[in-house]
Length: 181
Image (cartoon, rainbow, N blue to C red; front, top):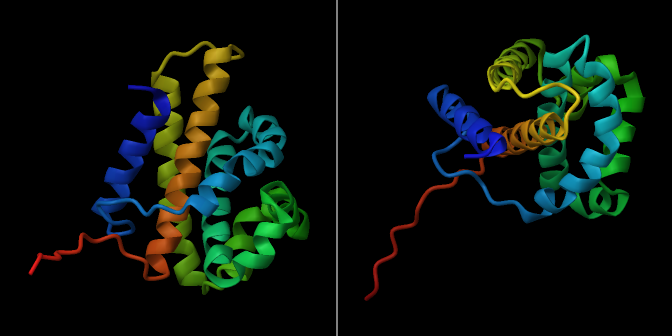
């Protein structure tokens, strides 16, 4: 099993256990298609921050997934024209990289302080779990394998951010029981 899949499975189980995502993950091709552009914009910042602030480097991408899911729900026509890299850079530049979490939670998602605190706790747990998995993998730092694992971790966290926010917005993935007549 590759690192991204293992991370996605772990995060999914955790978020199911606290009721923040459904058993079945949402399928949102619009946001998945935007991932390469988001990664292109985020990667230089994420790599730079990983050495000193690895949990932040990992967690911020989950917030970005949440913010883009909100934009998908509210104003996708305009957001999709802007592109993933530009959307990320706009969010980052509004309050700076260090304040990206608060900007997304309070301004873009419109959460109150208590709600924001709960989401921050959950994102922190997801990022910490992912960092632990990276550390336990014993992949040598600075190698191609390490870069691949880091990008896989970011993608898993982005995917969970999207799922978390879509769930919060009321999108639930439940099987339909349609029986033929």
